[in-house]
Image (cartoon, rainbow, N blue to C red; front, side, top):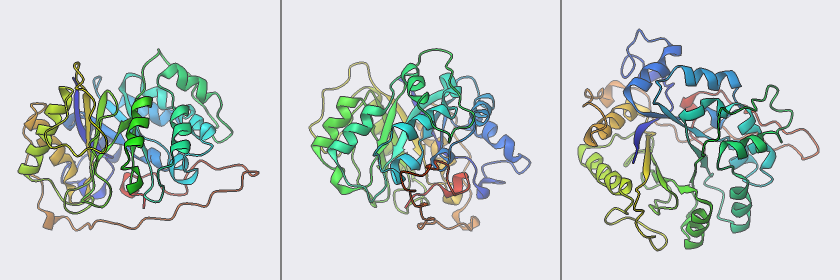
Length: 337
């Protein structure tokens, strides 16, 4: 089964002259990063709808065998709070996502910490998610005027995968795990330095992991011991089994005989640790060469940011809803409160 180890975003100022050679221009950053890791989680899409031309550019600037995951809009998760989501989700798929073609990996839906588990709301939301590109096109045709240049094409029918990252303790509920399994949606295994729930239940035919830092959120690097620990988990997941000592909320299902694909993204970007940790983990798994040593944390003056701009208020239903963000679409600001 495939294992993709990568990074969350690629546009971070402190990475220039450290991970990125100083002569690399900003437009060349993605192409360079895609030669160092096997996958990248696009997170600027969390803040705004992007033009179809942007999706095409990302496709063209990466190798043939590259895979992206995509962070879905916060308008759906944080403003609509998963309710009445059909049109906003349609807008997302009409914006050009499908231009990634075979490079489109899982779609990440991140739930805000303030949103508690509600079985009815979640059941309705998961029921709107398309599981192949044909379904996605049918949904995309329900877009509204917030997509001025919709992309309503697909080169072929391809499967779509979805992953859900939760941050409220009420989701530590066997009923929630059963709901994800019914819909074939992966529960994100999120290492958040103990800030939010950590669950390792397997709910789909793939595993999605986000490593935000094991000691300091978004900032701390992973030690050799920690990376060996994660490598052992990944070896178990790819065979279809639960790792020894997995933290489960519900009863484990039977091992998946055909195994599971595993996607892992390092989001500890402060101090330039994410790309080096990703490359080292890939090396431990036999998926890439051994990387150079990361720069000293003392050399990087950036500090982790734990407070983020407030969400724009949701407009009354009688007015036209604006699904585009009021924030710049830079990866550096991808830290919802």
